[in-house]
Amino acid sequence: MKRTCFGIVLLLLSVSVFAQHGGDLCWGWDDRKPPELKEAMFRQLVEDNRVESIYICGQPIGLTQPLVVDKPVRIEGVGGLAVIFAKNKLPDSAAMLKFTKNASGSSMYKVEIDGNFHATKGIEVEGADSFSIHRSTLRNFIGTDFKYGAVDAYSDIYPARAIQITNGKRINIIDNIIENIGGHDTSSDRYFNGVDLVREGRLAHRGISIVGSVSGQVDIIYNTINDVYGYLDSSAVYVQSIGCGVPCYEGMISNNEISSFGKTAINLINNGFSVQSNHITSMGMSNQVGSRTIGTTSSAIFSLCTGLQCNDNIINRNIIELQRAYRGIQAIGEHYVGGNQVTIHSPYITARGMLTYEFSLQVSSGLSHFSGNRIYGEAKNPHLGATNYADGYCINSVSHTYRSEVYHDCDPVLPSAVLLRH
Image 1 (cartoon, rainbow, N blue to C red):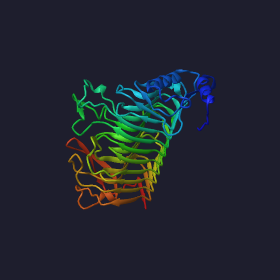
Image 2 (cartoon, rainbow, N blue to C red):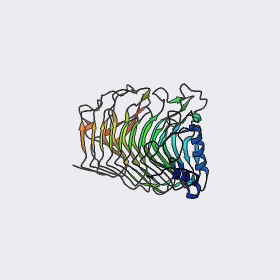
Image 3 (cartoon, one colour):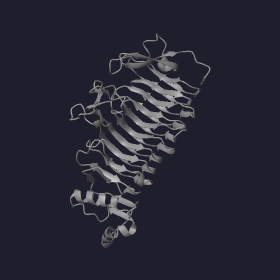
Image 4 (cartoon, rainbow, N blue to C red):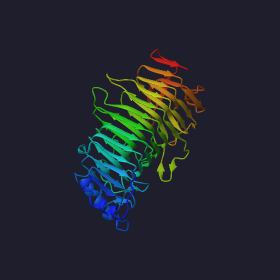
């Protein structure tokens, strides 16, 4: 939104904020004032029930403590300098901005949220009916440093999240940039005082995390997500329904650009979803990106559709190119998998020194329809002879345990429940 204001009009706008039901931290704001005053005014506007919209630009707003939004509000950046950043270390359990159930209908537009590696989470939404974030940037969030920090219990270990939504309905995450999200975990850090941190979800770093037991539309479209790291568990996009008799969330994850992720680019544990036209790459050869561990991809797209009310998930027209991976696409349950292009360029040994078991496309446990997928690359499974399963399909995989790692052998014969068409 652009507005032209001159002279005394600026002053009139700033003093008539509440009469207009709009809060203005942009026009007429004196950037020579200490940034603490701008944070204080921002909090006042968020807490005032008469204010429906807040406009920000100019001097960045440095948060010295988390901010809870408990009413519907639109936060909009004007120009290119709308920045909210963590000024100091925030509590690991807290998000920079948390929207409660009472904040249903809230939105953010053209705002940069910078964790500055002082915050574990950027935006948290809990129980809201309708929330949207468009054309914004979220970056630099890091999980609890449990390896070198003063952490006494596993419950004090929190993963990094750019956007975390729990039991939210009508979610729109469109045309945003998400980057540098992750944690300190390495291959030796899975267990903490006898607790399996991966099983407990304490290392589950996410760019976007949507989890719940409510029914609602979810659209994650046209986002750019880079460098979601964490060797043992990290996903650029994660959607999970919990305890639903019928499919909870429905919607689409489409036209996103995702690169450099630790475990999965898209992790879908849900029914009735469309995952289409995403471009997914992970080309790093090194285990480390600076001090951050990228690790070996489990699956670029993992989709689990199970239960009595399993509606087919659709995975189509995605382009996937990976340097190191276990799977390009892994689908469990009823799926349509069509028109995808998968390329894996991979060594035989993973970053953890484990032997690879690689397949471009894998399906099990259900009626699935394959059509028109294109598979490239020279990666082979060294344990199945000369057969190049990375250039083919893995059907009815059987899990095995090998030195605490899970791998899959495959039946190369297509069962009648799988339709394979070229």
